[in-house]
Image (cartoon, rainbow, N blue to C red; front, side, top):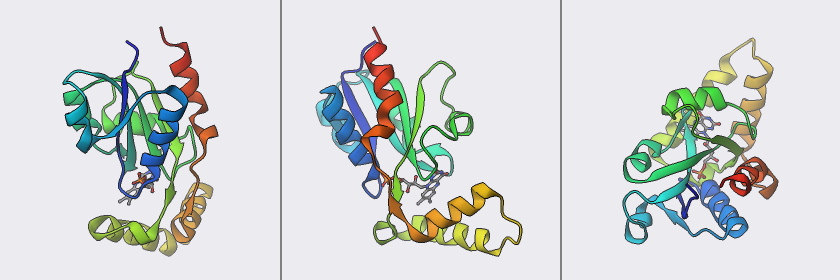
Length: 166
Ligand SMILES: Cc1cc2nc3c(=O)[nH]c(=O)nc-3n(C[C@H](O)[C@H](O)[C@H](O)COP(=O)(O)O)c2cc1C
């Protein structure tokens, strides 16, 4: 079924910006999961966007209990289109449900509490490793310098899927 809205969860703003870009491109309204309840009926057909948290899509389980999710998009530090198998497995996203990943960013200033602690701990673990894989080196660089990788071009595959559904 064609989605009627976009629902998202964002902690530091990158996912919210992707939701806004997707809304611009599709004409679908975008609601944070907090506001969606006021605007959408239970069972509404939606595209769900959530930030990646330990390879899980934040609040996907919560959203899937309330809405009919047509496609999922995880926004992470990983490069666009990567981690698909791992995310599907961790988030328990059914095979056959379209899944996309796009690169968001890292804003240390907006991170607080447990999330900030976890990122600092992960940075320390990676720093202490004497033998780092290329992926670990790339992740460490992103964690340390932060950055903003939000780009409409990263939504290309998701938009292609959207344009081709019946
Ligand atoms: C505690 C924590 C865990 C994270 N785990 C992952 C991860 O497993 N994979 C990944 O690619 N990015 C991970 N990230 C990075 C976020 O998904 C990324 O910063 C994202 O753009 C945040 O989106 P937001 O601004 O909408 O909250 C993690 C970030 C935090 C704070």
